[in-house]
Length: 181
Length: 181
Image 1 (tube, each protein chain N blue to C red):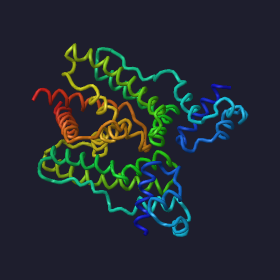
Image 2 (image 1 turned 90 degrees about the vertical axis):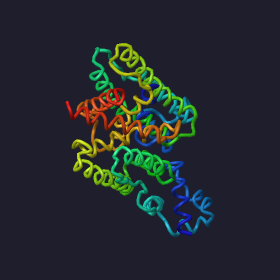
Image 3 (image 1 turned 180 degrees about the vertical axis):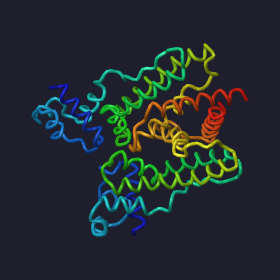
């Protein structure tokens, strides 16, 4: 029952944001009694927080195949996939609609920090091996993932592997060129 | 009266999104009678649409100084400023919270299209002059503005002229390098 309710809550936050959240809809989608939902989660924000925290840590992995271009392109595709899941869309929606809730912000920040740590680990190896001149990891991550977020938010089309290759190629070539100046 | 109500509506959508929109709050902020607001805008979505459409066209200009790097960096700073105004934040919030409303989506798309046309005009000149190899204008615009949107959404810090210079330098150098390959 718990799992079904948490999945339903995630689905609804992804669709409507946190503000339009309704117990009736969660109960209907999860196929449980509304009273059961109320009794277990008297505060709807607590339910949302538990729903968003209950999934396994982000599935966005960044491999080390030795080829930074390929690894980063695969990372961007995995990021796009993750942002497109109910949980990913729910996380985007809660920040837009509830920037003032600290617990919600903390969940979003945690997901962001996990991705940043993943990037840092891979890039540190690239710096050591001389695959990449030393750059600010935060800044590079925003540059790489900015277009992914923007394209998905527009919602006009998906983010493809071809997009990922182009973004990575241009940014890596740009960093090398600027560094060589 | 109209202007005060429209400004108040924009302010509230920027803060709360369209879902939590309340006539009482608009009336209070605009310092007018609630009945006046109801009578003039019986449908709250109509009020929001009028509020978001009532401003002058986006103030994001893209100059042609002859130096593409400087022009694009100034454009990104102007974009960040525009996205940070009540109207810019309201436009971001409505799409996140009301993706299903066609009229609202049309306003957001129009703002986006205006920016794209501005970019196209300047980039076409750059292509003609050989300042830049021919690239997809949409794609380049997403790459340049992605980090601006992402940084502002995180809300941790502002987007500076230094950020703009770095983004533009890396992307322009990258395009030249990839094209020369």
